[in-house]
Length: 606
Image 1 (cartoon, rainbow, N blue to C red):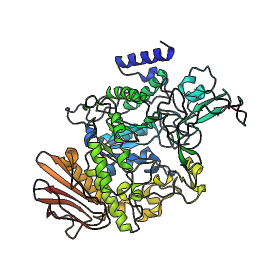
Image 2: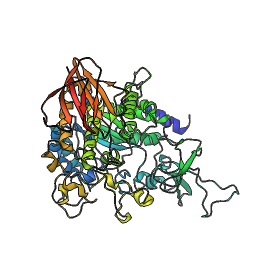
Image 3: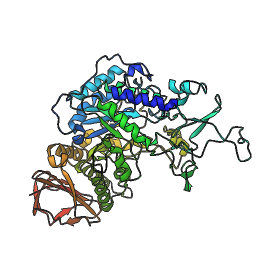
């Protein structure tokens, strides 16, 4: 047995004996002063349905949520100050994108210390206080676990690149270059890259290190070298990171870029595809750097580490898989739905990226998810920090602002009445829109600088939260927010929309309350009906003797639908847009349900 395999075997034996002691691993940074593990509030509650099956998750980009000290950058105390807002809205758990120390090349996704808080965001004491205050309000905290790569400024990588025989050399992916067909190096005097693999953010995925005369691999930015997950010491250290944060009371992790953990050991070239990307590279299929089977071994190990803690900790994965079948594998269940020893909630990009209002496409995708062989819980979302906001994507081509707002409400209904765990992105509840920089000089995101103007980066979906109509939209009391406040903040903000019963915010709040109060919406079954309608997506949610009907008009014309199901009438519990009757209950015939353009109805079947 070679050294690598022996080390891996010993690591797995240690896991079988119990959780890895983070004090015994090569920690990424200094431990907190907290000495006792913070246990979730319901850790000793009677067993029952897992909390994450009923939860509504809310993603917070901490830099942009709330600034508490006037420096123009959101922080932990700012999040804590808004916990009452989140509770009142109806949120059960918050996923916070990275707050670890970082050079900030990728705004936190290049981590230089996994077990500390970046001073820009506060202190470990601030974090512990936030977790305690969130728990007091029934809100759990989910951390972002950046598993694929680190910053090049972390001590691990500094040691790794120090010399070829450094003990941490094998913590990263290093390879010799190769000579050209003529047996000579390239025109710059260096060997050519080991193969044609490309970075997701443009150009080669290999960077030459002059000191040790080898290339290191990075799926993302040059400053984000990939960890070598074949190395058992890497696994041990990274599992210690999980334990560290579990001891600080987190309820689970969203695992970043998990499908990129392993690369083809034969180093084969990826196939080229037609055309060029925004960075001027030939398009490529990431065939040999995505979704290798060893990913599932790691997910099982991660699950085992967090399951050693009370409170039913949850794992959410950034699983932008090519189809539902690939997504289903993330659950770790067999074809009969047994097992389920990997991830509880793989994020469903198949649903998120339909990117058009198509009843037929949504129906097809939802039916595929319902039929997943793992029988896993779906996890749905429509916006996050890496993609344009749904207000823009799903209203593309629509010029009437009122209709755009109706579409935002329609998407809220689709998210919050479907069978699955919904995930919101901060600001979507008020209809925040993507506001891209107008000039390259204003761009913060490196991919925007690299790909301008075809690729403007992700600043547009990361602008500060719009709380009110005051200076800087209530985000900061300082002079200059880190990103500009969009002009839309004057009317699209929590303060203004709270006073309008038919605003996007009021719609989200009402739907969240409805989901919490109606067992059929919270945990009922799903059944598509009227399944040949190309304009209207309709489905039933059933729990016990109660049946709720959801009817979503995904077209710009008024529609009338006839639903064939048990019963002939239904009491409308919510209609959008609000009619003359406002929120008063109306009774409709299931054979004749009228819908406004981009309108929806939620009704209780009688």
